[in-house]
Length: 318
Image (cartoon, rainbow, N blue to C red; front, side, top):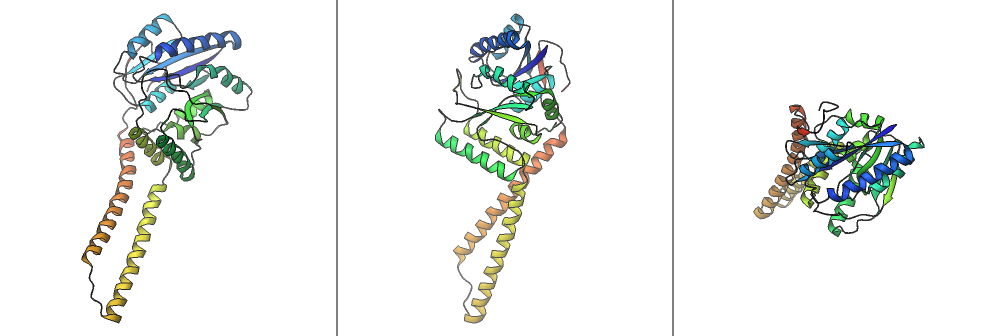
């Protein structure tokens, strides 16, 4: 009998889990009867500060299909997904959120598509951003357009982390053991045939989003630096352009001085130019610093996550 591992990262989802657990168990019962498929439900408690862990303990005690891993602190959703991939046991693996924005009811349809043999992954994408602030939607769409132009990662606009994958694709993702992770880019980078399922945006059933505009901005920078060296090229091109402009200014000043005897003046304008060039230099140094920081973190070889508690023996080592 085939097994599907459902990986559910959780951070302060105490209010959402009472809605999610009955729904995912309902889907598990349906798929067991209709497709002879068992669901292995693996929750990753990412250092929650509320009673999420207590809810997961209770769920695991009452249902053998439920497992959980609890981190020693908050390591982030990327680390939680990686831990799920490392410790899932299914022939297939799905990633989804506990806030019900990823409808569990789509899982049977996703499984049916994989059974055709035409695809290795079935992923979801939002066709609307209903309930999201317009400014946030604008920057999100701009990010998808930018990263697809400057990188070789195939990231679809509105793509969610919610997807069902074959074991082969999961193993390919695990082969990328980098510390600085951007899963949306990794899913596209490893390739494989992906079927996209569009659906209307669904708001959270409870609680608040953990992704502020600032966190999303930093996450977008993570994606750009992880899958593109274009910023480094931009810094180099800006340096060449500014050197060319400076050379033109020197020529103009020499001609004015030699031909017209015009003294070199304009202290305020000179200061503006100096400050402008200084700002450009700091900006370029900042770009270099981002890539250097990523390299520094990779060379430390620190674990991506640390498990403090689990309800059973781990299947794999982190």
